[in-house]
Amino acid sequence: MEENKALMAVVVIQSIYAGYFVLTKLAFDVGMNTFVFVFYRQAAATLFLAPISFFFLRKTAAPPLSLSIFIKIFMLSLFGITMSLDVVGVALKYSSASLGAATSNTLPVITFFLAVLFRMEKVNIKTSPGIMKIAGVVLCIGGVATIAFYRGPLLQILMHHHLININHSSDQQLLIQHQIPDTKTWIKGVFLMLLSNITWALWLVLQGRVLKSYPSKLLLTTMQCLMSTVQSFIVALAFARNHAQWKLGWNIRLISVAYCGIVVTGITFYLQAWVIENKGPVFLAMTTPLIMVITIIISAFIFGEIITFGSILGALLLVGGLYFVLWGKTKEEARAKQSIQGTDDDDVEKACEG
Image (cartoon, rainbow, N blue to C red; front, side):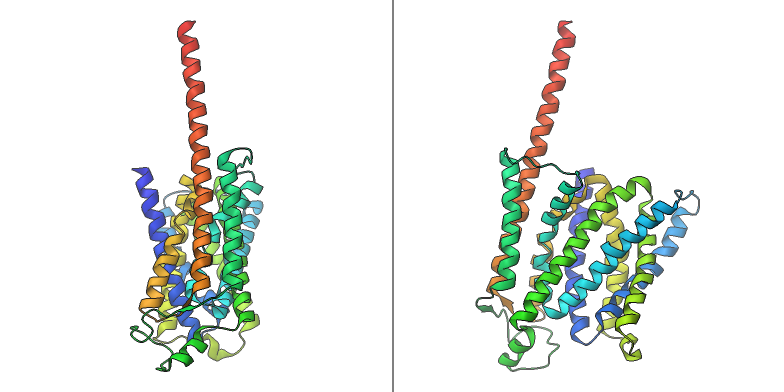
């Protein structure tokens, strides 16, 4: 039952993130400043979570918040949330929602690599599971390189019949020029997306450690949102000094902020904290390909986004790398269980003989 709950939670998380890529890209395409967007979404998340935290925790004592724990939470918010969201915002401006979803498949492999560095995961290159993990990392690198440096033919799915066209142009060539940036801009977008995933993976790994010293998932999530709100406000002030860039109306900007702030930040952050505590950071990342599948369906069939063959090929390599790593991890865990079971059986036999 617990396994089913965890699986359902991660499927919900990845589906929500697919909506995040699409709506965020739409907001940026209509001119919203990326840094202002991050501030508004974090502020919305804080306003959403603060009363919930007060309601559920009013009768229970909050865990002690020492200076060292406060600094850990502050740095976790700075690098894992504020920096990651600001970087991915700029990356989406340079690229597309489908690219963002595709490169998110690097997250599990990066998470695994960081978990190895922090000694939360082990890899033995002398065993087949260890070789599969290494092969997964290589495939992941190959996938990123393919997406960045190879485009290939354009896949124009329902180019003339999509439901929403924010560009208001019926000229196919103009749409292609608008949606497909030049090579230099595209490469920037890919590697900024990769940098965002590295900081996000770092957040996934380190949050598990912080939860051990501060076990209140809801309060930890709320504090991270509050700190990130302050941090992102300072960043936004530095990059968006025109008052017009801060205006919200009854349009896609407000919808995107509300969705990302309440649904993405408020709900998924808590769900992620629960999954990390119960199943670990790598398990959370295992359903990441769902983001790509759902995002491509929405972007191509509803918004008419043009997808390059190189992006699809690179994404397949990334998914392959992901499942190589997961296969190796699963086999390793199975062998560890068999080893423990065998040791227990030997102990029972000795006890019976004695």
